[in-house]
Image 1 (cartoon, each protein chain N blue to C red):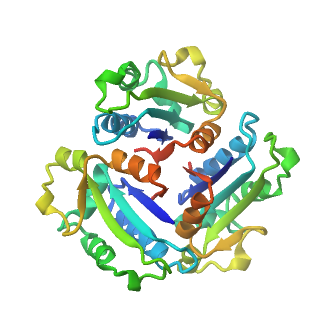
Image 2: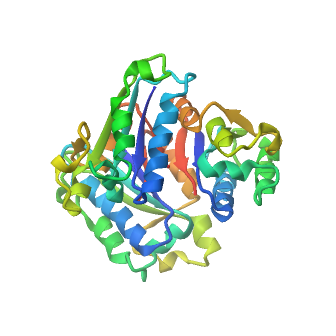
Amino acid sequence: MRTAMHCSADAPDAQRRALANAANLLGDDTVPLSGLVVVFNGDGVHAVRADSPVADDVRGLLARTPEETNSPEAPTIEVCACSNSLAARDVAEDELVYGVDVVSSGMGELTRRQADGYGYIKVP
Amino acid sequence: MRTAMHCSADAPDAQRRALANAANLLGDDTVPLSGLVVVFNGDGVHAVRADSPVADDVRGLLARTPEETNSPEAPTIEVCACSNSLAARDVAEDELVYGVDVVSSGMGELTRRQADGYGYIKVP
Amino acid sequence: MRTAMHCSADAPDAQRRALANAANLLGDDTVPLSGLVVVFNGDGVHAVRADSPVADDVRGLLARTPEETNSPEAPTIEVCACSNSLAARDVAEDELVYGVDVVSSGMGELTRRQADGYGYIKVP
């Protein structure tokens, strides 16, 4: 099973809860998760700036090895940011947490992932 | 057709609208609905406490028989609460509306249901 | 690929961002999009009133021809409003932006579309 999470929340507290949702999924040993992607768009992209209040939560998520999850399926873990949203906020790619992928559009990525079989959860 | 609704809203008014969304789906005779599950997580779990302002709406949803819906398919109706969210708020299982199921995690349940063919709607 | 977007936001600014999300998806030439439907329910239905602050954004979305998108697949574009939500707010069908479809229920339409293979994105 694979899931795409979508976060467009602007408040750091909400972004932190969204990232905690991702951690909770990885910690659920009843779910044979093989892939997780968290897509940030709109003001949500501020979450993945290297200097954001939740940058360490993003780093922690990306640093998690498959063995450090409870899934029996060694999930891949990805974090993406919408290029339109970054451009509209004058955020350059090199200002992001290392490892975050910039995607053509958050909407496009969420569409593509679901067409590929991912579930979808709006977080938080 | 089956749908998983997801509510993480903390305000009772928003929780009430989420439950009204569920009732509206059950009342739509153009949809051959065979299953509905409403998953509460985060501060949304307060909705399913036996003493919550919307507890009667939760009870009403769970008490609805297939005949009391407009679906031609006799839908099963379930309400779930995330165990992580309950634990973080010191809410015990026996404080919940009778009939609410506690699931390992809201994120896991929503992932599992979609992998099983359910649609997903974030409410309200 | 086809996507159903869902907007229940009451604030015109949020509704405008939801419609911008739709435009961003249509502008993403990496997504072979063949269908897009934006479903408004709850207070979100105010967005599609002919006199709403975002009515021109709704008109612009509906007026977009397949050639005016970047999708290689000539997407159909639809905007829907929930009949329950309209009735609860005393909004008549002839008060809506021309071209908006009234559906039996927003929840039912989102269930039906996903059963038909559409992805789902809650916007904004």
